[in-house]
Length: 259
Image (cartoon, rainbow, N blue to C red):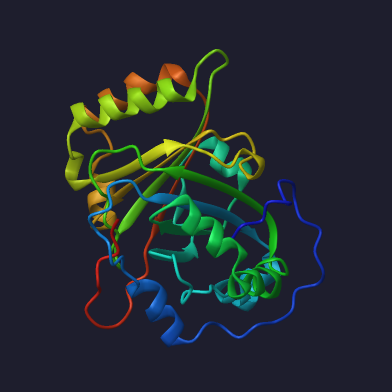
């Protein structure tokens, strides 16, 4: 997890320091990390969107935004590039990379944020390489878990509600809409109200829809039930960031990461 509570506006950072890309062992640990408590129904989700400096991307240093993966309380973590931006708000925000992590409780999230290994990763690798960050946290309000495995394709949605609309209304509407749509083309979802507004640039709601592959994700476009679900919640929304990413597949058989 990367918590940058003080930075809700573009960062003015020192010149990029070249960093060697992460080792294959580190990439394997990140990709294969799995939850030891898959029965937990309501994980805490943490999303950080990062806009990397152009020179960081060009040098490969963006891939070396080191992550403290061996810290108690961390159930799952993925960091990597954005596959594609799917909405005008996403294009305006311009994230190039993201981090997605999961915790069993809010206390686990808070403990990880304060851990020296996490702080060192942020100060040593993230701040020198990031122009801007956006972070959202929520407790999963979906009925079922949304397991993530190496090779999964994920659609992330962040939303602001219209004036006069309570975020709880949106959560209820999304719960009803996703239930009505069923597991559209194999999607598993997690969604909820953001509880870290200081870092979220006004985004009040977050959702991830997890698919087994990019092909399955692409297959939902134009699906009748999915379009009905979108139509049901659209009147409540003001601004929406939608983007896709893929969880890197490491060598060897992957272990599911699920809460």
